[in-house]
Length: 308
Ligand code: CP
Image 1: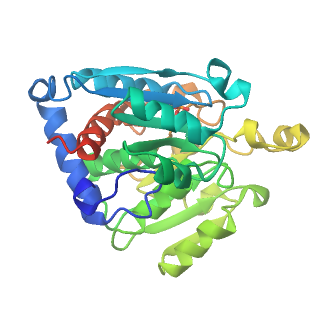
Image 2 (image 1 turned 135 degrees about the vertical axis):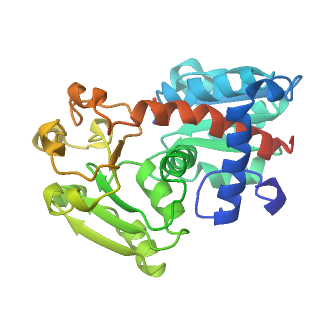
């Protein structure tokens, strides 16, 4: 990443397959020998600017920096920052440039990446931007696939749920289409279909994808199913949310005819879309997936700081 002069990370579109694989190599080295990296960021500070709630992204970035020997600072909601007094995101980023060496920003507004590019001299990483993208989630999703299947090429993957508002989906699709012979199955209610701009990118990349409302049309063919929550907070009309919230629910019965090596991923948090009884089945990988976020975020911090 640093080697390609990408200073900030707001989209997976700009990462090459080689960038991604290099990141995975480093994440694997860290995962295998975390002690070797326990002081490499001594004296460095990570700023966490979270304008929207988070458990995994914020805490795993904190864990990542602490495990690298660095320190952390930040806020956990816009309420705790001077955004409540009307301060712009540009000025907030300018300020954190004085206080930290690298920062993570989660924000509801699209276009934060452009602002970061204009005003920041320290690397800024997206911790999730509006309904647009969540690049570090996609990288840890891919890393989980890589660990599971050794090779991401040739996989047949289903995406289930809220494909319109889920920001992890575009980031993961933009990464997956860099790989060879990927089959993509987009499974959602009609009103939560993937957005046109994302579908255009699939078309431009000549991706092999199918759109359906029926999970059982494809489930038996899949290597992995990426389940997402219906994103309540993005709905303008709560009645629409109520109508759609139970569109899909994965239970042990749902999975009776899946492939033996099949796995279920979910960026989490989950609400009702995966029954708790699925957690103990051999197919569930969503908790390991979240754990992989620490290794990927440690690797990313090192790449963007140029510390290897
Ligand atoms: N996957 C994810 O972004 O979770 P959080 O909202 O808890 O950070």
